[in-house]
Image (cartoon, rainbow, N blue to C red; front, side, top):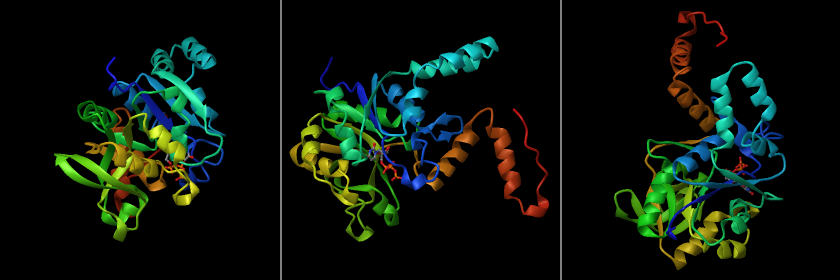
Length: 303
Ligand code: UTP
């Protein structure tokens, strides 16, 4: 195996999900359904489609549903078998066979950097991917696969980037960089959630990373930064000083599904694309957009 093979992915899922309260008080944000699959399943499927074999999910209190989702559900399987629902049965069984799953508990939500550090023993001395499950990327070539491709050529950390409106930079980690090829940038610095006047660019880091194991000793030394959390961005800034770091503009549509508005937009887009729901849902939306006096009466229906 080449030492530039990326086989493992970390999905941090121990955050508190405060932007989605009260829904996330007792249920994991990562289990919010986007049409008919929980958000975290999209992240797992993207990882698997990008060649990842081992998935390390960082969990915390109140996140048990995530483990149950990727485990077998024997009672449910028996029930579906007994009632002849073969297609649903194979879908349900498939979920537990997607990858090798490991779980690490982050006992306190000390920040994304700390969550990634929790995976150190399971990653060992090899490059790995990080996927933030609340950023959904809809792309013909999976977002992570695009980064892995760049990593294999460049052999340095690669961050997934996208341009964001200038007034939105304070919601993201923003890079200072210079362009070295179409869509590819050499990262020279990073700043977490800058005020628009302080932002070095409008290129935001969007929840996909391929990192070398050298990030771990840096994370271990990283002090709490913004919001008192150990920030991955701060550790990346140190890493960029020691070894080449790249940013790749990911081709695809990104949705911030950890935010209420972003989640609603993603829901509408995925519902419209869904072959069995899309046409009826599209009709409903068109009708709903008419002035109230001109709307057809619609009935709720059982599929
Ligand atoms: P976010 O800041 O987007 O998620 O962190 P959050 O903290 O859950 O949500 P808000 O901002 O309070 O609404 C990015 C990712 O890092 C994980 C989160 O689960 C999310 O996937 N995370 C964050 C951890 O695993 N541990 C932490 O201590 C912090």
